[in-house]
Image 1: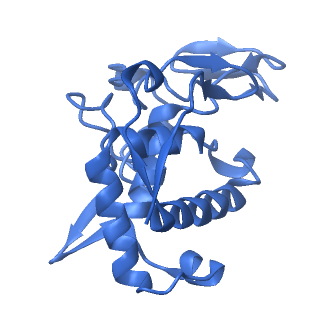
Image 2: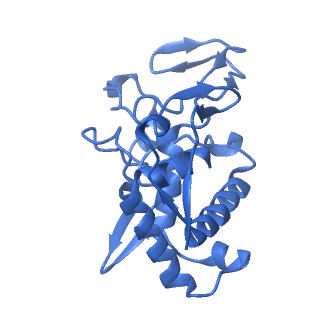
Length: 210
């Protein structure tokens, strides 16, 4: 959420478009928690997903090989600790060019299941990359491209759904009640520090009540 409020201030147009989308669906009354969680707001979901992808709050994950295996031609002995990088190639950097001869049959069968980001803008903060056109409407597409914010598969984060609930509730209430105005350049920098998570060094906000 520290990154969230920084990005709301940095991207005034995105902030306003999200506010309008939420207001159109929730109406003039302040929505309840159940209203917020049930609302279909593609622009909101896209903003949160791009925030997680781009700001890389949890930069790496740890796994242990439970058996001897091979990945892209490299031997991985049993007991080896492997660290998938959440902001590496194909996430916010162009993907590596992998020779298909190095891939297993299972890998080849699934490598196109998730689309790849456009290399020209993969590093940019663009929430709309998570939106898909359906006639005159836009739909949030959680499979638009690769991301590792919460890990994948059976060993993905157990708190993923709870985290999305928290972020959605807080973001909607903040945006409906306050305008996040630009802050001075020296306080709007993107300097980071690594603690348990990847955090901004400066998180300052200038609020105007709505």
